[in-house]
Every structure is written in structure tokens, then in C-alpha cells.
Length: 343
Image 1 (cartoon, rainbow, N blue to C red):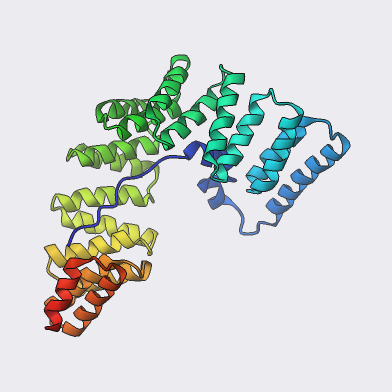
Image 2 (cartoon, one colour):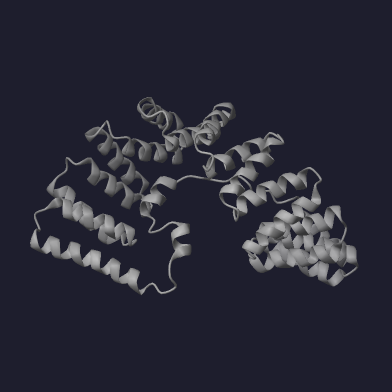
């Protein structure tokens, strides 16, 4: 039996996601419940571009413009057709390759995106945008050396480019150089105290190093985003690991208030009540909630089975151990529990 610690946050693909997203979270919260006007606006812009292309079919920039509008609308196959048309008319414009890369990335065609960005860098070596996007792809495919080289080039001309600093920090973190990673992330929060992802990464690193500074960084992340489940989870996990159980319970409960289907918060509440507080009926309640969130959660079945066994409900324990083994045939401790309560 073990505590669930699914806390290795992955903050990749943020540049491409930002490029392909239609609106920010804040914007969506402020939108009217009636989306008719927005839909009409979308249709109007697309109609304008369609009309412009009909009138001037030889203007390649219009196809690129429409491709970007189609990206915004998440109509990627149509966007690809348009940017391929633009490139067939003029293959010397770096911005077209950037558009092609955004579409390819959105469609999961990483190699195509990479090749397009290499071409964009060749065509416009002074433009940091394709370098940062290419560096991100190198980071994703774990070509860290190449990624850092590009990011260093960006930072030589723009020392305050926080995106490049953050991505370089992620490279350093992934190769295990946490000293350099921390240095980059700390530079970011000194420049921009509201840079959420840098606070989170510092919290994760400090937590892995058993450094109490982790709590402060999670606190800072929550100042930026008070409803961050991952920041609450990270802080709750720190408190749980350091026997501040009431604070851990409070953070996990806050997560569930934000997202009732967060299975890991439910599980860890169950774990606290089972292992530390020995309040088995309460633990059963939380493990049951974890299973409502994920019916395939074998460890929740196993831990709930242990609670039932402690409570003397042998049949319920056997049912849960059996469910755990069914989901995970090599679950040896669940097999042992099933034998224990059925013999």
C-alpha cells in the first residue's frame, strides 16, 4: 500500500497551445451564456476572408490569414489546405512556415512541425518566435542540447524573454541539473511575480529536495491562481508528508470543492483517515468517492478492502480485493488479501 503522489507536472506544449487556443480562461469566464453573437462574429470573419479570396485568388497572404482563422476555430484540416496553398504560391515567407508548424503540432504531426520551424529559422534567423517554438519541440522529443542552444541564442538578444528562460529551465530540470533550473525559474519570478508556472516548478523541485521552501512557492502559485488544483495538491502533499494533517485535509478538501472528480485528492483523504487517523468508515467514504471518479482505480479498491477488513466486513473486503486483482492481475498484495479473507 502506498500514498498516491502523482505530482510531476508537465508544462510542455504551452506555446503551441496558446497559439491554437480560442480564448483564455478569464475570457471564457466573462463570456455571456449566449454565444450567438460570438458565433456570428466567427462566421463573419470567415465569410470576409472567403470573399476576399474569391475576389483576389492570387494573394497568398489571404490563404495564410484564413488558415490562422481556421486554426482559431480548430478546423485544422481546412487550415492545412490553405497554408499549403499559400506555400505553393510563395515558399520564402517564414510566417507561413510558422502557421504550418502550428497546424502540424495541433494535429500531432511533430516531425512536420519541426521541419517547418527549421525552415522558418533558416528564412528569418533574427526572428525569435520560430526559434522558441523549435526549442519547444526539441524539449518535447528530449533533444535537450539542441533546445538549450536555440534558447541561448534567443536570450543573447533578449535577456528578459521569460518564455525562453522558462523553457531553458525545463530543459535543465529534465536532464537533472536542478541548480540551473532553479536559477532560471527564480530569475523569472523576480522579473514577473505572477509567472504561475515558474512558481509551480520551483515548488515541485523544492518538494523533491525536501526543502520547506516548497510551501512558499505553492503559496505564490495560489496567489496567482487560487483555484489551482495542482498547487493545492502539491502543498497538501507537503503537509501530509510532514505530519501537518489538518492542513493537508484542508487543501485536499479545497481541491474537491473545485473539482469533485479529482480522484487523487479523494484517495489521499482516504489514506490519511486510514493510516494516520484510523477512522476506517471515513476512509471508506473517500476511497468510494475516488472510485466514483475512476471506476478502474485498482489501488482505491485495495485500500478500501483493507479498511473493510479492519472493520470486520469480510465479504466487502473480498469483493474489493477481487476487483483490484481483476483490474490488475499482477497485484500481489491484493491477491494476498483475497486469500486472507476467503480462507
